[in-house]
Image (cartoon, rainbow over all chains, first blue to last red; front, top):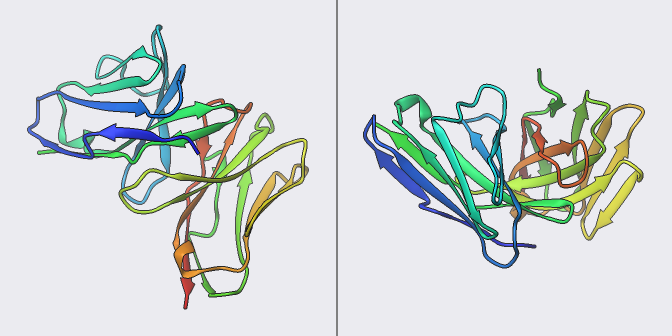
Length: 113
Length: 112
């Protein structure tokens, strides 16, 4: 399968700061990437669809000004959590699409103190 | 509104026996289904998928069955191995490659 990496794998930050998470497709080009969030003992919930060279499409209830997505190249999408608060603490996972299948990165654990 | 449901939060199976994980969906627009395996603090790993034009897809020890009329799919793992112990998520999309809606997950424990 295709390989997706994420960086960092874990981040702890203070409330009010911004955090950037990178998602890279290592062996394929991804015109579309997806960002998901998973709270403890819950399912993965799609936050937004990231399209290379254009604006991201956000799911209902996800604040686009808080979760900034940039997909500047065919192998890199970034998610910036701006002015993070403790309720933003979660596991953030990205995926890239190869033909019919989405391949996921290893995830980023964000803890906001 | 949970459009994809996995009603069994957990399943325990003896090594060597068959594991059957079930998934139900409500959205008739879904036409592509996938199963992922996930360990804690890791991203999901793709296992197998099926298009709505098929009712069965097999890959090694993994077989997915789809019953469109019942809006039900299942993942069969045979023989089950201790290394299969993980949380399994089914996911659905309106067309292949489209955004995924995930089920709530089933934790599988395979006993040696």
